[in-house]
Length: 66
Image (cartoon, rainbow, N blue to C red; front, side):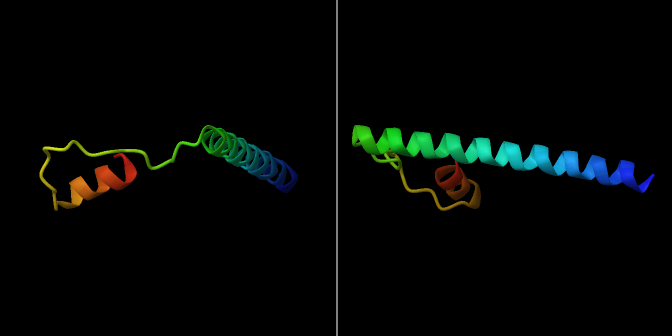
């Protein structure tokens, strides 16, 4: 019984690590592409006529894209 649980935990851990590696590789490819093309990653611009918003939700939307 403990061998089964250990094997399940090992499988879950390996899957999670694999997904993390894929995300890291994807992010590094994107960073290389942005660096090669000369664009900045923070190229998001606010509209010129917008007023600065001070609410928590507005800050989270602006910083994290929520």
